[in-house]
Image (tube, rainbow, N blue to C red; front, side):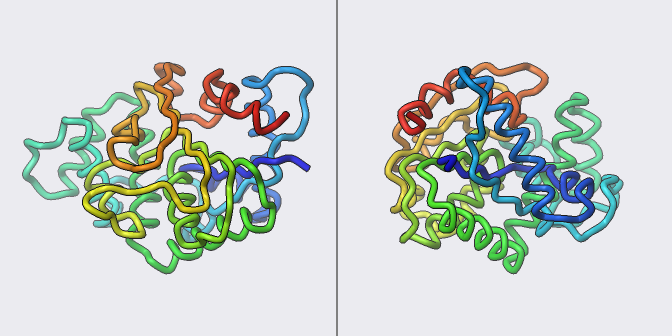
Length: 271
């Protein structure tokens, strides 16, 4: 049986819609892609690597169409997250106007790739961090998949690293040989870091108790992975890799799963 569980990141609601609002259908479509992406890093004979992708995007969306809401309709919590995220980039400190005005200014200032990312990033992260009911459902779903599949390795991308971190802390009985976080915003000040559960101790987080080894990989240009290195924020990060994936596709699962740095850490667990 494949020994990896994947946990996806932001912007994956389209899988659910294209599968006819089927969670198993969305999961299967994503798993086929992730197997293909990972094969690019590992080489050799193509085979299934992932036992399952913990699919939770439907829990963070309200069942509407895929079209993004206009900027002026974004909720206040999403605006707040976006504003704090911009401060981490060093471009928002001088803005003192209303959050809606700020959001419009920010999206105009960012280049096309960052603006498109921000529209996806802020609402889903804001929903997860501020809606405790949905947060618990996402966390419970991820924990259930890991407990059921009993993988040696969990690979968590983007927002999925936040959900996975909290899920593993909430269920310390779950053991994982290797946790790999890719493009993780876990250390993002004011947006994510201070809002993590369990609460920080002396301003630091810690590797979940059931995780034996934690590897973090971040692209140097990834605007979600701020800071890219997590050891300054968390105790128990065993290895960090700062990579240079692609100046355009700086946050995609395809680029992260296909990078040689990941393959080097996975091979001992897949032999």
